[in-house]
Length: 395
Image (cartoon, rainbow, N blue to C red; front, side, top):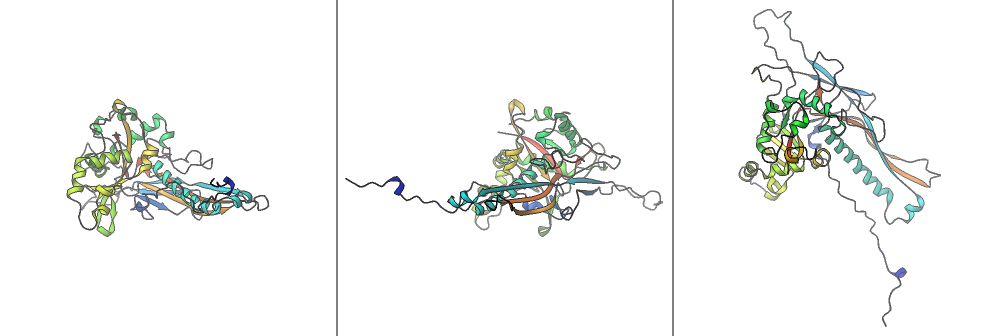
């Protein structure tokens, strides 16, 4: 008879290195910087002290001047506004006691340190995503300093009322797009406008992206009086200094990006017009995914847009609707009050309980401008500074 092992005598091994679930790095990072020419402008004004930072916004001068006439008394007034931003705290921690730490098969403190760093990256990425579809206000965001806090300035779309959505849309009709629906045909309510979107004509395509680009290029100019500036902010393209080139950046979720990839015009352009140098499997977007370039627009896939901002089946015949965001310079502001720093529990029951944490302070918001004559601006007064917001049907 063969001798069998007792279960208590069988060798069980545990890896010391922990495998955690997937956390993707932020695809917003390449578009963030300290210059006002970046798509996402990083502001460090609150890092020393302060509660609020105002972003100064000034429209370009649009007058005709006077030529040889009298200039005195005919000077042009600058149209300016200070858009306010507030920062809030983001904190998290992991605690355990000496008994469980001693019996654990992996190093809890070391693992917690890596996971906390990942958590800090994730909340920033998620807050930037939420800010893309936020409704700007000129007042402190709800639940600031609450639990779990709120670092997104303005009103998150998920928390906005139907009236607030309508007011924002009507204040931004020259920079809001519903698929291929003509601007003159857009109803006055968001729900009615979204109901026009169908999966035949209004999915994301290169043509829809080019329409959004044209809308951005014509912002600030009166549609009723061609060539006449209407006093509203003009969306300035993002400049790539190394290439001496300007373009717009379009952030879109998985549903819209999938439709764009399958668009025959986009597919043919990437198949026939992209360079063949080097390894095509690492440079050609047909194989790599994640980004597409066409007609002066860089399309960047942000999966979190679908995860966090999908609007559900509100289109024609219950078509699913998803937003996209065509951005120029200074579309968003990211105000840092404190960069992420590690913390630890120092008074945990006579050193028996230990804990590691991380904390940061920041605020992120869509930059918007009110007319010079408006004081105490609110929803309906504020116009998105550097963004065209689009809505498309997805299958």
